[in-house]
Image 1: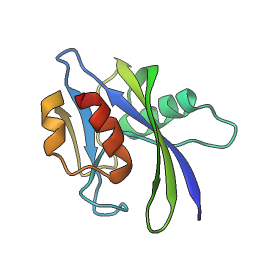
Image 2: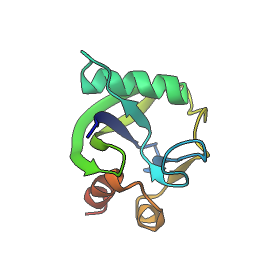
Image 3: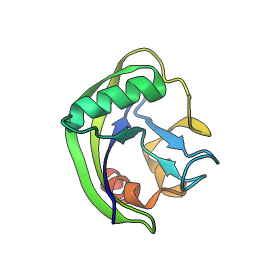
Image 4: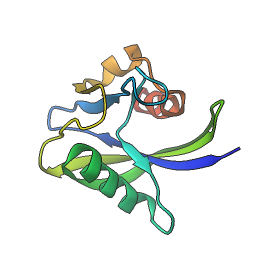
Length: 128
């Protein structure tokens, strides 16, 4: 089965809210919430991939901090290795270019969202 290495950013603002992205109807798993990010390219480290993906996807710059979780999840069509990191926006404001919705949520609100399965372990760690 095809394995994809993906990185996700847990971006926290000055109010302690976390940026979450709802997958659009043109994406796989439409309507599921996820942490913004994307695929790690060949010969690219995880942090650089995350910085690049957020720049492309949200048109803002981030600083990447510590790793939160590494989750291997098997979907029907592929297997995903999702590595999530804490991050903070250093310049710009998030612009929604590809998701159905981008929204800031308080930590306690995360448990009410319909998350993509690979993101659930990170959510659980954040809520501990």
